[in-house]
Length: 112
Length: 112
Image (cartoon, rainbow over the protein chains, first blue to last red):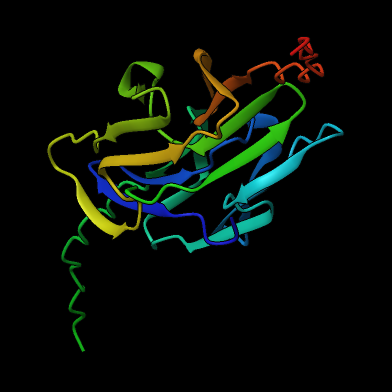
């Protein structure tokens, strides 16, 4: 699960990070922001073991995983929301409003 | 998603098939038995597209997928249950009771 697949979408007003996390509850998932510019998604899943289990096939990866994404310059690290549903985590990071165009400045011409 | 990972467990009384299916609702998943001996799990997931989406990264596989498992001889194809939770499907196939040990047969010795 170290390399769980993700999509990153650029939509009007936000960046959306969609990460496959089958078998993880919301409480198992951690979403963090480092230095206002790195989005860090991590979690861990473990096999629910009963006794008397004999594995005939074992393809599902267990253990810790992490994904890191550098946020674009116009992402607003203070406006992040995350929701998990059917084993898919969706993190939405709002965009900062575009900077206002700089107005032409008028420099006063002094009489020398 | 064609090769979505699966575990197969042999537990007392049953075989348990655990399949990662992130993003699929129960209604998107089909569990079938062919000829009483092949377990067929299939489904399809699609990207939920809005307009004005620009993909910066696209790792999650979409489309149809299928997994086939030959059931062991002592699996009871009439006693199968399936439940989906947090993007993980669990299919439980009960085992048939073990055949009763054959009692020694007594062959009557006729008087010739």
